[in-house]
Length: 230
Image 1: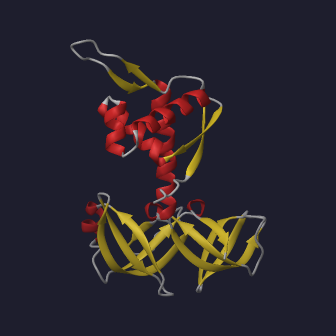
Image 2 (image 1 turned 30 degrees about the vertical axis):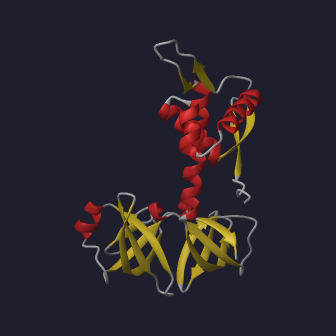
């Protein structure tokens, strides 16, 4: 049986590029936790020789040690630990994972470009009669169908529209509630029956009385939106 190939990402560390995937990342994490390459290889299901080869390739690429290994005497005391470079590799890959996780949870809203205001440096999007603004992008033209992308954590929930720096405000209704990573994830149905996810704290949910069936207004700043062609 052939093992599925893991997606690789290019890390730029100290001016050098290195390919990294989740298998090698998990190996480094386990070495840091276990203090042993052998134990780390067992916990990740990586053959010991393969684990050593991974480390060797990383060190050859970077020109510095990624893992420090010390031999123990008769009384033991040997082990392995990540060097400062190894820790930096883990840190940079973790950043990529968090970005990818955020992207995978992004809401998508369909709309059409109704106006491009070159003087005001904004574009206007017609979202089923609602007007949404975002920073101007010269790659788009009036009349084009587009998809708006926005993260659940970049959306503000209000009980009524408020005057603020948040210009984009849309009416909706809560149709779903669930816990998500120590937050409460609201599923909000909009005027076109599309739904989007919004993350709030339990404190905010109780304070605003955000329960199923509640009519609310969601707001988001123009800079928190990304746009792609439909």
